[in-house]
Amino acid sequence: MLSMTGFGKAGKNFGARGVLTLEISSVNRKQFELRCNLPPEFSALENETRKRVSAEISRGSIQLRGTWRRGNESVSDCRIDCELLRRLAESCREVRKSCQLDESVDVEALVSVPGVILHGVPDPDDPELAAFFFSVLDDTLADYRKMRETEGSALKIDLEKRLALLENTLAGIEPLVAGLPEIAKKRLLGKLEAEKIPVPATDEQLLKEILFYADHADVTEEITRLKSHFGQFRKFFASDRATGRSMDFLIQESF
Image 1 (tube, helix red, strand yellow):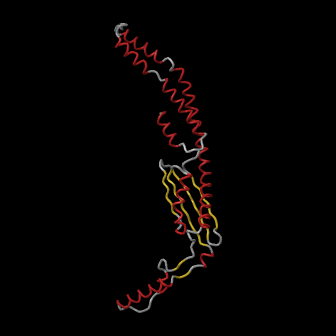
Image 2 (cartoon, one colour; image 1 turned 90 degrees about the vertical axis):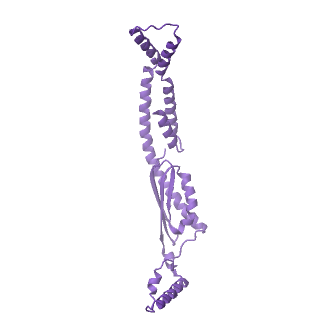
Image 3 (tube, rainbow, N blue to C red; image 1 turned 120 degrees about the vertical axis):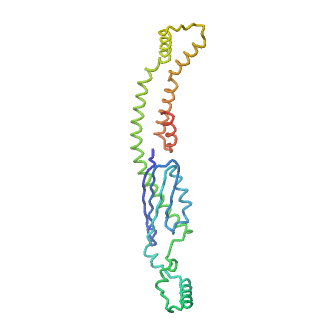
C-alpha cells in the first residue's frame, strides 16, 4: 500500500557540463495533476517526463522541480552573439542621432540584454542528454516511492486495526439480531392485543402489513454485505495496485 503523499530527490553530474537535481512531491487529490518546472535546457523532454511520472503515480497533486548548475565546461563555452550585439549598437546610435544625444554607446549595458551572451547548453536532441536526464528522474521517483511505501505501511497498520475492530463488533452484533423479524412480529401483535384490536386470520391486508414491518427489522443482507466489504478491504491491503478509489467506494457503501 502506497501513501498519496511523498517526497523524492536525486541529482547527478553530466560530466563537466553541469549538475542536474530533480525533486518531486505530492499531496492528496482525487485526480492526477502534475506541474513541471524543469530547467530550460531540458524543457524539450517534458512530454516524455509526464508520461513516465503518470505511469508511476495514478492520483494526487504532484510538483516536479529541477535545477541545472552549469559546470566548468559550460562556463568556458560562453560566447557573445556579436551579430545581435552589433545590431543593438547600431540601433542605439540611430536613436541617439535622431534624438540628438551623445554618440557614445554603453556596450556594457547592451551585453546585459538577454540572449546577447550565449552559454554552452545541452542539446535537447542529444540521446546522451535524454538518457542522463531520465536516469536522474528514475532515481528521483525511486526515492519518492520509498517515502510513499513507508507512509503507506503506517497507514496500512492503522487501517487493519480499525478493520479488526469493525469485524469484532459485527461478530458481536450478528447473534443479537438473528431473531429480530420474529421479535418485531410478536411486538406488533402484542401491541394490537393490548389495544384490544383483533387480528383475524382472514384479514390478509393487516397480516401483510405486520409481515412488512417485521421484515424491515431483518438486517441479514446488510451483515452479509459488510462481511463482503471487509473481505475486499483485506484483499486491497495485500494488493500492489492503486486501490484508493475502490476503498473510497467501499467506505461509502459500508457507512
